Amino acid sequence: MSDRHEGFDWPALMRVAYQGLGLSPAAFWALTPSEFLTLLGPENGAAPLRRDAFDALLARFPDQRNEDENDRDG
Image (cartoon, rainbow, N blue to C red; front, side, top):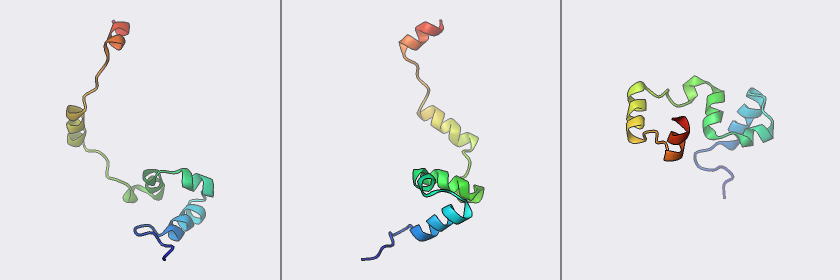
C-alpha cells in the first residue's frame, strides 16, 4: 500500500510549508486548503469573484432579516 494519497504529494506540501513559508507543523495543519493556496500566491488561488458572479449569488441568496431585527432598527 502506498503512503502517497492520490491528488496530494504530502511531503512536497509540507516541505513548501515548513521550508518555503516557514510555517510550524501546527500552523500548517490548522490551515484550510484555500488558506494554504492563498499563502502560495495569487497565481495558485481561485480567481477573484467577478461582479456578475457576485450579483448572481446575491440574487440566489438574498440577505434576509428576521422580524426581530427589523423591530430593533426601526
